[in-house]
Amino acid sequence: MNKDEQIKEMVRQKYSEIALQDKETNASSCCGAGCCSTEVYNIMSDDYTELNGYNPDADLGLGCGLPTQFAKIKKGDTIIDLGSGAGNDCFVARAETGETGKVIGIDFTPAMIEKARGNAEKRGFNNVEFRQGDIESMPVSSGVADVVVSNCVLNLVPDKQAVFSEIYRVLKTGGHFSISDVVLVGELPEKLQSAAEMYAGCVAGASRKDDYLSFIRQAGFSNITIQKEKPIIIPDDILKNYLNEAESEIYRTNSTIIRSITVYAEK
Image (cartoon, rainbow, N blue to C red; front, top):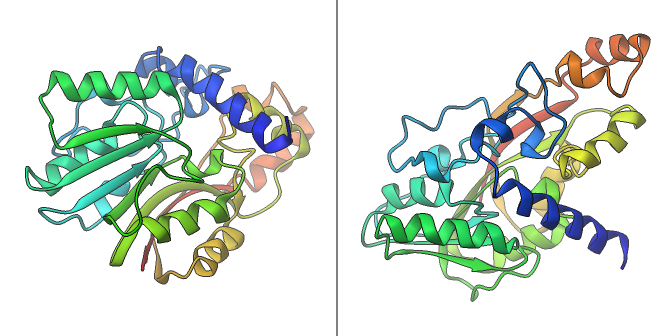
């Protein structure tokens, strides 16, 4: 098994565990993946609860933004959500596109697909479906989507360039995406890079911001826009598990290395 496959298997196993946890457990760790913080490190500090379509059963507290809020979804649109988890963003997108639209969620963790399908069936959502698959090679025909959204998922994927090429493929001409993700604007301490593996790649898999935007340009997108950006702060009680006091102090002086961005682009 090569390194990319090892990363994918680690993520699949971890997110199978996360699918069985409640939001409070996930919210007390980075992307729900372990090593709880008494300061409750929830990188999704944005509040979904006021958005139409929000359902607490589908909210596992795993995001790092609100891409659906920025996605310019119109009635009747077909939307694809990458890394759909328990269905939270899909159900918010459904409220935007309405009964005449369609929402397709893609996730490669069987436990997440099962949970999302159960949530959709309980609510009688006939225009929301969930497909198991790899977002580096989506189980979707070309040119079917008006909008693609994703929330804190591409940082988990080894080949981000392949994902953006796939997004370009599945979008209709004139379509667009709005994606929230984790990026870096500096160097993480080596000890944190290895520690981040415990967080299912939320930080370890993050690209430099400039590289990330370059992947989008190389895929052929235009009108690339940062819709929102915020720092992600790792609390002291997690830092002290990996850095000594001097190292922690150095890190804290430049603690905005890790960022959440919501980026928009058009085909």
